[in-house]
Image (cartoon, rainbow, N blue to C red; front, side, top):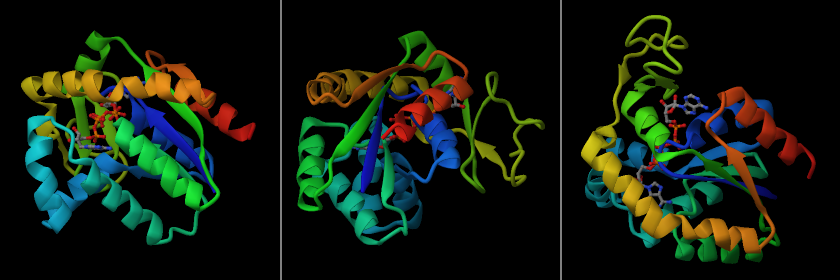
Length: 216
Ligand code: AP5
């Protein structure tokens, strides 16, 4: 099994990079944020538990996240290569992932830290729009659709995420600094961290990650 992780602040471009990397490789995109939003939409037990935390820009409890990820991995995907986006996000999640993979004789082989300055994160998050139909990601200035408010791919309506309001964005960035940033050093010590300058065109970022993945 191959496992890689995209680590970075909200708006660093994890989801955007994951789309490009997974299109160019056999890696399967596993995004805990997307899985949680889907659970909220469907009103499942996990969704009901997660919604209030997400609305406030706080992290969902580790026990819920780990249960969701395990459920996904146990569901069987036909793939043996996973690209985690937004997971792990706490030291406890990282340790639980290490333990679960250890039981399968696997480990995290690569962690890509997407690094961008705060003002860029803010402008990316406030300008983000997502397709209600297929989930494709846009930005009103950087990656605009051909027709305003309409997805180029499926023609679906574009919407703004509930947690992309300025006050919630500020809270999410603080939570990242307090609870997730320490994972950079944690993975660096394990020798698996690659720093990626994410203040560049998405194709350059994707290309760099794909080159590293294809070497192992
Ligand atoms: P999640 O959905 O994971 O949100 P996030 O980490 O805050 O990250 P974002 O999705 O906001 O940003 P991104 O880095 O993916 O950027 P994107 O590519 O979209 O989590 C949401 C919530 O769920 C959390 O707050 C928490 O409550 C909960 N949660 C999730 N996982 C959890 C966990 N493991 N533990 C506990 N709770 C968890 O890009 C942003 C914008 O910039 C887009 O508009 C895009 O088009 C644009 N853009 C991206 N890259 C570029 C580029 N290179 N050039 C120009 N524009 C770009």
